[in-house]
Image (tube, rainbow, N blue to C red; front, top):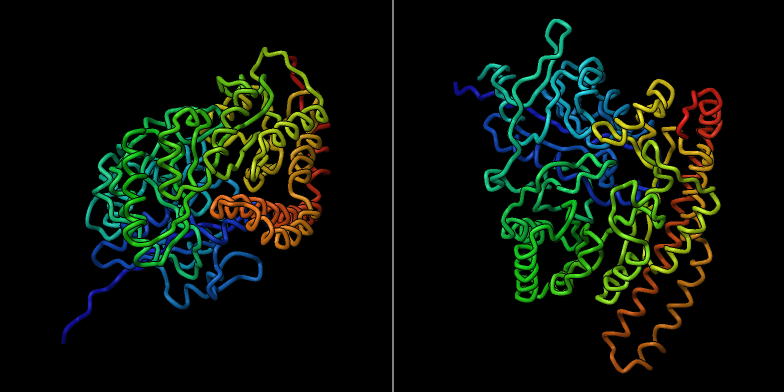
Length: 525
């Protein structure tokens, strides 16, 4: 009788956020790209089936747990996984990751984790919290070798770029070189993401960023794929999943100018030939406004929105972040993006800690005022105000820990590392409560309830505006931008309101105030 070969199941999980926050809405419409790449690599292996569960996107009748996230008992009864991977790219989801790792270990599965959180200082923590192996660096090639080792087809020590425990000691294998030839990797297969309803598809061309910002975990020389590969990703998603909305996850779009323009021109040609209207968003440096040819190519390709890291409108904070630009120049460059028709999403970091020896003091109300004035003058379409996060592996965390300013993980856990909570003692005269409340105050002055009434007013205004403007196309764009922004600002108000209710339940202020009162001070603050 013919004997069927055993097939193994690999499940990779993007853990749920610890609570509802300002990212929850967008997370329910997209997914993380890294785990999709890993699942795709495994699914190409003989004897292996792969799937991905994104706990933040379970909109298609996903098996949800009453406590939040997915019902993993149901998943294991339905299709038990032999090996389970965990995406550790977001530090705030690490407590949930450990909870799931413990569950799957008890189910007899082998557990693997990877992502930006698992730098050197956190590897031992992970390996003692239910993780059998930690992948250090990119995982597409490492996961294939590691699964072969688990099957007994190769020695574990031969697998590059992993860490594991042996007799209580952390063993690290030689590091794996970052991927340079991206054509060796299969195109990410989003059909492996189960129960998710993806509206915005993440795509990429360049990995790495050469800016070396103190607060960022993305490092290294940028490694580009060919422009044709990015176009192929988009084409496949359009043709196989009817995708129309994309987010280019490259940290800095346009790092290779000529190749970027080539991609934009090819994408424009593809859309014209197939009568398509795609909508793309890209992250880009503010100084790219000086390259009007690049901006024109982007707009013609369907890149309608840009996310820009303004970081701060305060010169002293910009200098602390090693940003060689002045607020007035930032306003001028933003005007160029708007002139080209881009929707501009501004990203800011409030209350950035000064380096040792720098003398700078500004009260919270004045800081808030400067942010509000800058945002209003820049006429930004959407904003995001975060608190500095001393993420594992960053120079910012190293500096603040040396100054004994980072609250211990035992007192303020990883779940608070999402940019919405103070996890360190700020510069005087700011208190932790002011740091927290100021960001909310700026967001609340931008996203407000009265925009609900403006939505209806703009609907009534639409016919008259189009009638009186001779250029109908221009009139439509002008009206749509106003209507869209009013809608987004009202929806933002609802999101912030829901987040505030959850925040109040946690009584986080009381905890922070207690920590602040008994935390040791230092001379330079």
